[in-house]
Length: 134
Image (cartoon, rainbow, N blue to C red; front, side, top):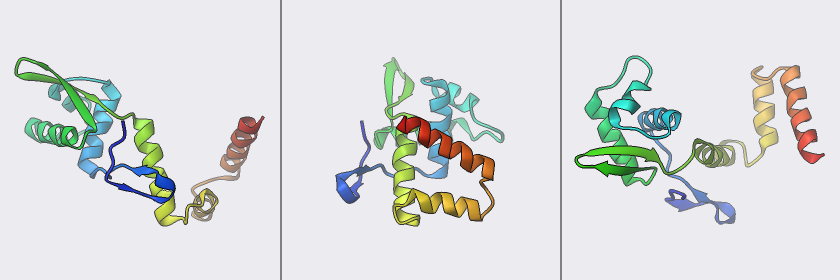
Protein backbone atom coordinates (compact mmCIF):
# COMPACT_ATOMS: atom_id res chain seq x y z
CA UNK A 1 0.00 0.00 0.00
CA UNK A 2 1.33 3.42 -0.90
CA UNK A 3 0.27 6.63 0.77
CA UNK A 4 0.15 9.23 -1.94
CA UNK A 5 -0.51 12.88 -2.32
CA UNK A 6 1.13 13.62 -5.65
CA UNK A 7 3.09 12.26 -8.57
CA UNK A 8 6.67 12.87 -9.60
CA UNK A 9 8.33 12.13 -12.93
CA UNK A 10 7.63 8.71 -14.47
CA UNK A 11 4.33 8.45 -12.53
CA UNK A 12 6.05 7.31 -9.33
CA UNK A 13 3.92 7.90 -6.26
CA UNK A 14 5.32 10.16 -3.57
CA UNK A 15 4.28 9.55 0.00
CA UNK A 16 3.34 12.45 2.12
CA UNK A 17 6.41 13.50 4.07
CA UNK A 18 6.04 12.78 7.75
CA UNK A 19 6.82 15.37 10.38
CA UNK A 20 9.70 14.70 12.77
CA UNK A 21 7.24 13.68 15.51
CA UNK A 22 5.33 11.40 13.13
CA UNK A 23 8.61 9.79 12.08
CA UNK A 24 9.49 9.17 15.74
CA UNK A 25 6.15 7.44 16.24
CA UNK A 26 6.63 5.35 13.10
CA UNK A 27 10.19 4.43 14.15
CA UNK A 28 8.84 3.14 17.47
CA UNK A 29 6.05 1.21 15.73
CA UNK A 30 8.39 -0.26 13.10
CA UNK A 31 10.65 -1.38 15.94
CA UNK A 32 7.91 -3.42 17.63
CA UNK A 33 5.89 -4.38 14.55
CA UNK A 34 2.55 -3.96 16.27
CA UNK A 35 1.36 -2.81 19.63
CA UNK A 36 -0.80 -0.59 21.78
CA UNK A 37 -0.04 3.08 22.43
CA UNK A 38 1.70 2.15 25.71
CA UNK A 39 3.97 -0.26 23.78
CA UNK A 40 4.79 2.36 21.18
CA UNK A 41 5.52 4.89 23.93
CA UNK A 42 7.83 2.39 25.66
CA UNK A 43 9.98 2.33 22.50
CA UNK A 44 10.60 6.08 22.47
CA UNK A 45 13.87 7.56 23.61
CA UNK A 46 14.10 10.04 26.47
CA UNK A 47 12.45 12.38 27.08
CA UNK A 48 9.28 10.45 26.30
CA UNK A 49 6.27 12.41 25.09
CA UNK A 50 2.96 12.25 26.93
CA UNK A 51 0.73 9.23 26.27
CA UNK A 52 -1.99 11.44 24.75
CA UNK A 53 0.53 12.99 22.36
CA UNK A 54 1.56 9.58 21.03
CA UNK A 55 -2.07 8.50 20.82
CA UNK A 56 -2.91 11.60 18.74
CA UNK A 57 0.11 11.06 16.49
CA UNK A 58 -0.85 7.45 15.85
CA UNK A 59 -4.45 8.38 15.04
CA UNK A 60 -3.13 11.03 12.63
CA UNK A 61 -0.87 8.46 11.01
CA UNK A 62 -3.88 6.20 10.69
CA UNK A 63 -5.78 8.97 8.87
CA UNK A 64 -2.80 9.34 6.51
CA UNK A 65 -2.95 5.55 5.97
CA UNK A 66 0.49 4.82 7.38
CA UNK A 67 -0.97 2.89 10.31
CA UNK A 68 -3.85 0.45 10.72
CA UNK A 69 -5.41 -1.04 13.82
CA UNK A 70 -7.26 -4.02 15.21
CA UNK A 71 -9.89 -3.17 17.82
CA UNK A 72 -10.30 -5.09 21.05
CA UNK A 73 -13.34 -3.38 22.54
CA UNK A 74 -12.25 0.21 23.23
CA UNK A 75 -8.55 -0.64 22.87
CA UNK A 76 -6.65 -0.57 19.60
CA UNK A 77 -3.59 -2.52 18.58
CA UNK A 78 -1.72 -0.57 15.91
CA UNK A 79 0.48 -1.83 13.09
CA UNK A 80 2.32 -0.14 10.20
CA UNK A 81 0.70 -0.30 6.77
CA UNK A 82 3.99 0.58 5.10
CA UNK A 83 7.42 -0.82 5.83
CA UNK A 84 10.34 1.25 6.96
CA UNK A 85 12.12 0.23 3.75
CA UNK A 86 9.24 1.42 1.54
CA UNK A 87 9.13 4.77 3.32
CA UNK A 88 12.92 5.15 3.19
CA UNK A 89 13.09 4.27 -0.50
CA UNK A 90 10.35 6.70 -1.47
CA UNK A 91 11.60 9.50 0.77
CA UNK A 92 15.19 9.13 -0.47
CA UNK A 93 14.07 9.08 -4.10
CA UNK A 94 12.27 12.38 -3.58
CA UNK A 95 15.19 13.82 -1.61
CA UNK A 96 17.70 12.91 -4.31
CA UNK A 97 15.38 14.36 -6.94
CA UNK A 98 14.79 17.61 -5.06
CA UNK A 99 18.32 18.27 -3.85
CA UNK A 100 20.69 16.36 -6.12
CA UNK A 101 19.11 16.59 -9.60
CA UNK A 102 18.09 12.89 -9.51
CA UNK A 103 21.78 11.92 -9.40
CA UNK A 104 23.02 9.45 -6.83
CA UNK A 105 26.51 10.25 -8.08
CA UNK A 106 25.90 13.83 -6.88
CA UNK A 107 24.83 12.45 -3.48
CA UNK A 108 27.99 10.37 -3.08
CA UNK A 109 30.07 13.29 -4.33
CA UNK A 110 28.46 15.61 -1.80
CA UNK A 111 29.20 13.29 1.12
CA UNK A 112 32.75 12.68 -0.09
CA UNK A 113 33.38 16.45 -0.30
CA UNK A 114 31.89 16.92 3.16
CA UNK A 115 34.25 14.17 4.39
CA UNK A 116 31.33 12.04 5.53
CA UNK A 117 32.55 9.14 3.36
CA UNK A 118 36.04 7.70 3.60
CA UNK A 119 38.00 6.01 0.83
CA UNK A 120 37.17 2.71 2.55
CA UNK A 121 33.45 3.58 2.47
CA UNK A 122 33.68 4.34 -1.25
CA UNK A 123 35.52 1.05 -1.88
CA UNK A 124 32.77 -0.79 0.02
CA UNK A 125 30.13 0.93 -2.13
CA UNK A 126 31.99 -0.08 -5.31
CA UNK A 127 32.23 -3.67 -4.03
CA UNK A 128 28.47 -3.73 -3.40
CA UNK A 129 27.75 -2.45 -6.91
CA UNK A 130 30.12 -4.96 -8.49
CA UNK A 131 28.59 -7.85 -6.48
CA UNK A 132 25.11 -6.83 -7.56
CA UNK A 133 26.17 -6.80 -11.23
CA UNK A 134 27.80 -10.23 -10.90
